[in-house]
Image 1 (tube, rainbow, N blue to C red):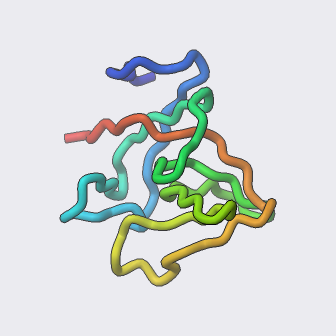
Image 2 (tube, rainbow, N blue to C red):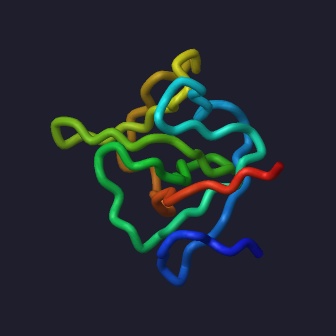
Image 3 (cartoon, one colour):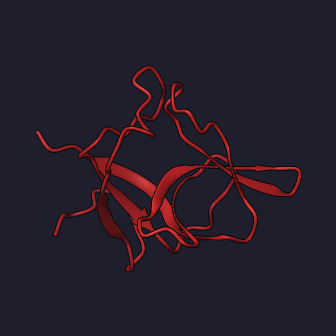
Length: 106
């Protein structure tokens, strides 16, 4: 168990980041492999939210930025060199929660 330093809903949980698709060392937000993120399912996702999503047919959840444009939803990695720049969501995904912060193990 890790204490979440930010106000959060009672169902908030923590996950360990696996991979570097959300690593953006020069950006406002960056999440490296091994970082711990806090995810609050009670927060309504908005355009630009960083979300944890379960895609149909996948064994693992995805952690990406949510883009809402023209009534359509997309997932976008923060890593500028990631090969899949935009992943369309077409009813094949469940948003598990919005990322409200991270904890980095030293």
